[in-house]
Amino acid sequence: MAKLLVGSLQRTFFSGDIVIFRNTPQPIFLSQRENVEEIYLPEPHEGWAQSMAWKWKVLEKLDVEKYDRVLFLDCDCLALRNLDHLCAGDWDFFYQPELDSIDQWCYNCFLTDEMLVKEKWRIGANAGTVGFRGSKCREIARKWGEINDSPPAPGRQAWGEDQAALNRLIVDAPKYGWRRRPFERGEIQFPLLHHPHWRNFMTSALLHAAAGGHENTPEKKLQFLYGVFAQRFLHRGDGSMIDLFEP
Image (cartoon, rainbow, N blue to C red):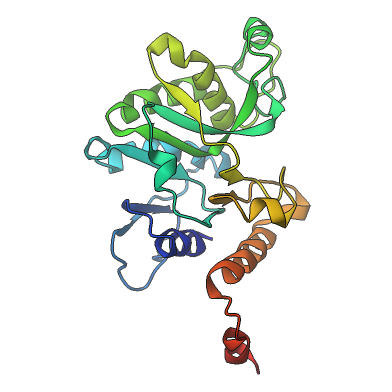
């Protein structure tokens, strides 16, 4: 999936540097690509769930202060259009809401009852697409990690801590003087979760194949993303690509 994401970013002329954090010693790409760096991070002994903490722990591997914006994307994303505009504007961090209220179990782990009453109008945010201002990146990500490592709010289930911690971070942002905002509406869509109609999700700038369960295994996500990649970037109206792969 990482190959498809990087390939889509380059084919849509993303102007920033691309850094891949991988959990395998083998490189993703066998030959060096311009403006693409790979960093190997062994998966934590605690397993997959703790690897979600990489979003803030990887900062020690990055010189984030030299960048105006830092954008984190899960590897099950695919760019359909250039993403530069998603990094524009006067904000300190930005995020992508889903469709459900923030009081749902996948967002509320660190939110008190008082917060849920006050923020009941807010839509829960997904932690797989999030960005920070470079100069504020370490400060915000450090607080994200502190929330993640804290005990759940009374009566809450400890689930999806990195995402739940992000939603608490969104609620707390004004307290720290951070300017937050969601991505432009419709520019990031979840085709396997909330936006299943291809006429809608193919107009977005970025697809995020977020979803779990036996119906959305990594293999099935890969098949879906490969199909969209081929349709977007490899299709030719004259049928030449079909002729190329014909047995």
